[in-house]
Image (cartoon, rainbow, N blue to C red; front, top):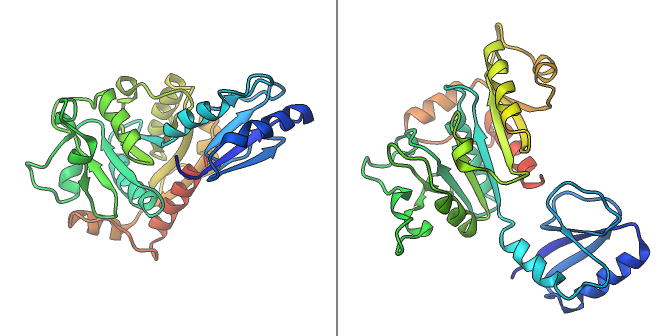
Length: 294
């Protein structure tokens, strides 16, 4: 088990003292800090009985400290983050955002792009038509590492074959093998994937009245997910503004991704827009940092 940032959250001095003692047997690579409120950006949160917290955390019961370190190790083994990116309608730019988000995350963490259903991501990346897919991973001798192809931008890509939705076993294998998994969930494929409670999800909302109506329906169908909303390909004309979108959806819009002719050009050449000088790519980087700290 590598280095971990652990937050112990309680306002009760007796609970804080007993929790601190429980870490005497913890690996020296762990960094344990006491907090009165739940912080962001830590690997594991441990909460005392006096803390009401609805997120993912390990509950600490005074007098029952013997399993705390083991519980944290199990939690840390599955702490790898998974973000589902969806669009309420076709043409929202979900695959484009997924691929660039994976490239941005890959500069900081081992990252896998996972194509949940066939959508042509292999062609986007310039792979041959007979490229490997995740279809063989369900076999006993299959592995995520063997099927995950190195992609431009430093991430790995698990690509789909035609006619199937990615099995849960493949998604679980990707989460074990990579620190971050970016799932291209396309338009309406969250239900077969059954995202876990409090999963991270990004919705790419077209800044139109139709896009808002469809986005509202998706939010209502999956209220348990941690949603972040972005708009893509905004420009002059009849597009809705950020305030209008937030009012219509009753949800914060994280950012607008502007129209970028240069992006279209590099995609036509089976590439990614990785220039730090690009406003579009800087906004993708900002989204990636927000997800890492979520």
